[in-house]
Length: 275
Image (cartoon, rainbow, N blue to C red; front, side):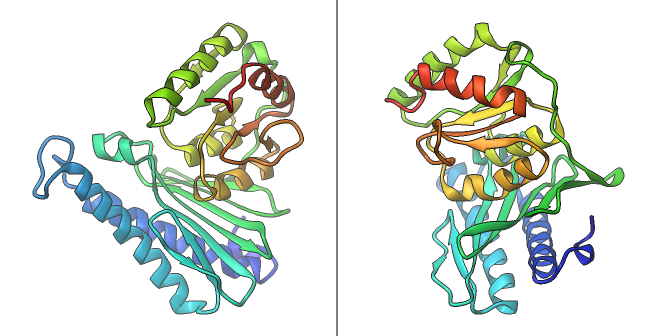
């Protein structure tokens, strides 16, 4: 569904998010040194990635604030402004940093627009996949690919937990990672298999696309979740955290309707949010 088919002001927010995500994705894709993981001109490859991350966020915030100067921002790389319009942009300029460092294709630009605290627009651009995903609240979820036109997204509907392909992520803190590995080990006998993609935004979109049946992770931030969570929900998936809670840093979960509740209870029993 093109942005012109949505009611304004959502169409305007979507068009701006798509433009910003596309331009930031091009900057990251075209500006990445080919030998980033093994050679570098700065003190370390991480410095180069950080510079790219910051440059992408600046591109996004400059573009949006130039057209909507009264909006607020929340960004991974420090963009923070309250704004006065009731609209806040939640930005992850490079989700999947380690993948980007190593030259793996699973990284994305994630941009969401909130209206009075509710996410109304979400865009996730995955340049190395040649795909961009978007959703507007109440308008469904859609993907545009380099080799095909726009298509609607719909999550799987019939998969039971025992046949579910589930993705997750791991924290950088060793003690937390060790516990997360224990939780994953408890899940393995109960599901088809487990994947570790490395980008929360793309994992959420893969649930929307039907490429995954579920995704969970602990330790995420608002910018990791905002756009992908909306896209997954608009594709028919259920999202949440611990039973009765919204997705938080404690636990974020997205899954097909048949998988969500049993997976949520399995994670609860495994103490997925504990150290």
